[in-house]
Length: 54
Image (tube, rainbow, N blue to C red):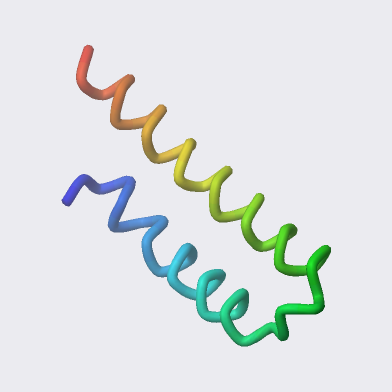
């Protein structure tokens, strides 16, 4: 696992747990968690892509 994944995985896991604990009718809150998770996942991919050229 890449260092950037090791750094962000605990954060993403925590966000997923919080998201899963929310009731389904809290749509806006759930979407907020989803956006945060996607942002972090994109940051990981971008960092790995940049490192592949280093």
